[in-house]
Image 1 (tube, rainbow, N blue to C red):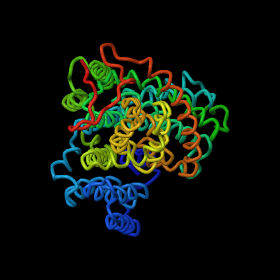
Image 2: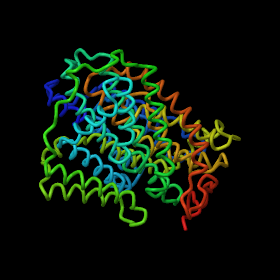
Image 3: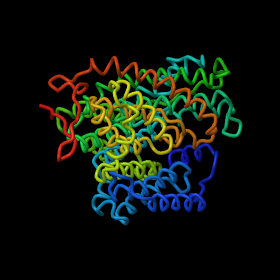
Image 4: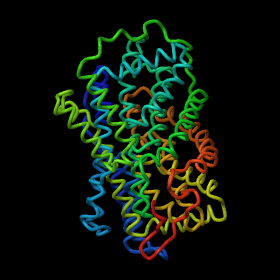
Length: 497
């Protein structure tokens, strides 16, 4: 259970803190598998460093999947192992943990923790209820789309935290707890994180996988994707995926209660405090600064830092409480994902994997290749955090696109969007947060997640084929027609004017 889910549960008396658990059996199995891979003959065309890298990568993926130890602990071990086994230099192994995109995600999640200390989450839910009404189907649609739209401008994990924190009192008023969770609570507790995850891929602000994709694409090709450029390509598809998510929920887990009872209506809130007004205005200014960062050239991590510093300097919230509630595990996984992704590039492992997978996409146009990459991304990210999966996959799909002779940009851009469609709750911080509350099981979630993946990847194929060729940043090259070419210095694209 992550820090934020534990805090919510403790607030409502649902659980007591539990020590982190370790499974020696799975740890030993993972280590044995890694040693076994290392002892195999090095495949033709693969370097020794790449061989050692894969011998490390597989055990890490297993440990993240089965949670044999806290995922943050495994993530810290990644940097140490990369240096210990001389896969990377010590500096190259640890530097990604302090990458500017990792720092940016830290700021975004902390912003969500700050907001959760105010009455703004409950006010947001009250507004959703006013729009959606007490009809559960209409309210579900409104909540799903609200989570999608809001998470484009605040981290999807933060929006999940905020909205779930607002929903739990509603369930308490109805007498619903994790012990007697019903179809209604399961529906809404999946609606929020899945909707938020869709919006999270829409902008750099929304999730760790978005800046991870841009950062790895820059490392692989030398092309720097700007904030507004990324948003132009990804916001519209993300909204459509939010709609697809709601359809999947209504098919796989429709709410049996058609209308919320009287006791579910939220009580009237006190007037907004002066501090909350300051935080609301600061949030608006921060979002505006994000949207103009392509022109101001102020990096988004710096903008987020000023929001946090001002809130703390002005004593608008309690800093100690923010530190206590901050979800450190996902941050460690995000840094480890970057370290593994960069190592995949540096060792040549990404190129070797791409060559093996090339036969699956040879001779097809980029929309078909994109659809295939979407399924690969959804499957891979189901076993690890989607930010980590994105950092790992972009270095693979760039050379794959080059081998297939198709534009590189749309293939790489497919990854952060498709890693939204996880099949297991561990693959996405929002679903992991919701699962930690104990209202639904992994099997119940899987039924919804599978239906959602099928529907949304079908919609992705349509949206990317229709929308992306039309979406072009003024003055930039046509990224849907520009392949990356391998040079002695790596993959290169035509740079922006």
